[in-house]
Image 1 (cartoon, rainbow, N blue to C red):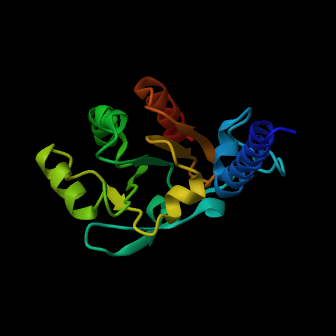
Image 2: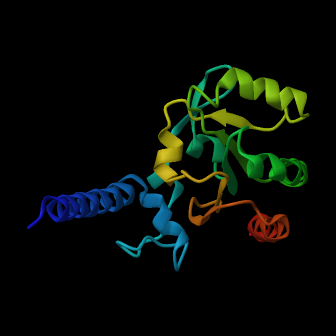
Length: 192
């Protein structure tokens, strides 16, 4: 076998090993992504109902006080939005979310979880952005330990999770929200 053919063969084998490792690693690190496949209300492994308590994580408010997503929900329906100020889709949907919080904030818990990375996204810069853009009153929490984003597999921003009052995860969807659909879902949840 010629040197160039052997080199190409070795490179091909190495590439195949790297791709397999990447797929296995992604699946291991992002179990919540499976919630968005065929049936967002069940996990594919056990076919049991996914619950917030199974994906609960610690987040921090602007005063660096720790709380959990379950504590924020406090038995109410909940919307969790994973976002960052550098994400144009996240910024674009903020006016819709602000309106929805105004409409449902007394009956639904909201947690805007800022995916802090320490470089592009920091608590101080996000707080400044919220103030400058008129969103300082939104219930924003910081995923300083990257626990919440990892638990829900929120690697694509924005990602929005809707939880029923009993803790059942109704949906976990990456991408910008459809505000009409979200309102319809929340309306159904607050009537129950």
